[in-house]
Figure 1 (cartoon, rainbow, N blue to C red):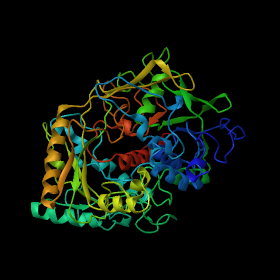
Figure 2: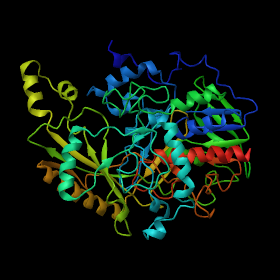
Figure 3: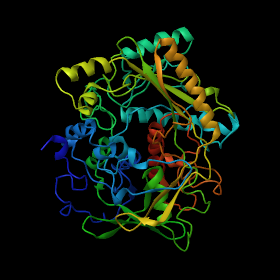
Figure 4: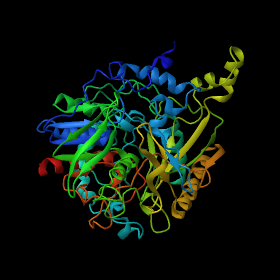
Amino acid sequence: MSGAESVGDGRSGGDGTTGDDVDRTPVPNADVCVVGAGPAGALVADRLAADREVVVLDAGPRFDPDDRLARRERAIRPAYDRPDVWDVGGERDAHENAGEWFYPLNHARVKGIGGSTLHWQGMVMRLHEDDFNSGTVRGVGPDWPIDYADLRPYYAEAERELGVAGGSGVDNPHAPPREEPHPMPAFEPSYSDSLFAEACEELGIDIHSVPNARNSEPYDDRSPCVGYGTCQPVCPSGAKYDATVHVDRAEAAGATVIDRAPVQYLDHDADRVTAAVYATPDGGEHRQEADAFVVAAGGVETPRLLLLSESEAYPDGLANSSGAVGRFFMDHLFAGAGGTLDEPTRQNHVGFYTSACDEFYDDADEERAPFKLEFFNYAGPSPVEMALSGDDWGDPLLERLRDGYGNHVAMGGLVEQLPRADSRITLDDDRVDDRGNPVPRIEWTVDDRALSTIERANEVQVAILEELGAEVEWVAGPDATGPAYHHMGTTRMSDDPAEGVVDPDCRTHDLENCWIASSSVFPTSGAMNPTLTIAALALRVGDGVDAWL
């Protein structure tokens, strides 16, 4: 049996059992119940565990760290699709699409302790100052009820908590202001970065380092990156941050983490949540009571849980007096271009990119969205992918590798999508999950501003590739774009209770003891990867809950 085949189905206990011998009964006298053990839930739990009785409920399993090499093997085998690596799929993860754009939800999500950080690429940028004031500065979209200055100290703390390798701040003149260097030095530019740098210099375009939540040197008792190159969807070494770091730390401080405990609904009265009702693998159902509740289940499952918690007091879903629960679903749109060079590019030596361009980001206005550019050093197939995807062996395989590997170049980019009320997460009453609950129904729409901005990003990308001397062989433009799998906006933050779901402290307007820690609270998306902002908001939520208790 191969290593990849030896990985379990992901629904057993962390000790390899069926999970029935694990104590999943409620914790008495809990101060805080956190729903979700991804990055937001883990940081909140760690923030509070030393002084509070904290219990964390997660729908998925504990994945055995010793299985990560086997999961890496599964990731590079063409017989497995990406969801297979972290056991995503089946009735548990069922969903429906109903929007004008198809959304492949299960392609990039994980249910389990660690959440999405188990498979993410690990890029951690701060939102720009104008992202918090888009309506005022750019003339489109709402302003956030907080600004960059409110989140700036939490950004710095989040970078220390996750362990971020990045530039001093001087190398990227387009980044928002910093108060200190990143905790670790940036990764050295890759060989292909140096090729891109020459072309960008000729065109007068800035290229700079990009912050990574992976160790460029030993940090927090974790090794530096050793170059497996399979960062997305699995890092076997632990050099890339994932939320099990803070889950373990929270447990060491006294928190109780219960896996395979999907919350079915939140019981409540008119202004308070009273219990999280969760299921267990033995078919049982339990009520976890607490003084405070933090929902940290991501941009899809968070609104779904609130909608599943409808009652006589909240007939349209819990915390939904505004009608905004599930609405304004956003993602980042991908723009890309690539081709080949008549010289070696040394692609696929690492599984993440080390250089980017933010030069065009703050040119955003009513007609053009913010966007960032990425210089890929993993363009084209790796030798392993090429070897495993063909039927030839020996000399024919070597000839194919010589002809097809080592001369690819590509660029990517992310573009902001505007919040729209008709882009939303609802419940599908015609399909249920493995517990009999309606599955999430995704209605994803994309605005014309985002599509036209993709065209502008493509223009810059093609210009750089042509200056490089590359033969451009593909362009991912408006007709070929797709999501970055950054779920945002479905329980958005607002000053006015009629306009959103949570207040500036991420506490629900309707319920005095319920907070939401998630990218679902973002009023706008910007074009920067959201995880660092999620982490900063989670730390801020932890402080708010602690002060309230």
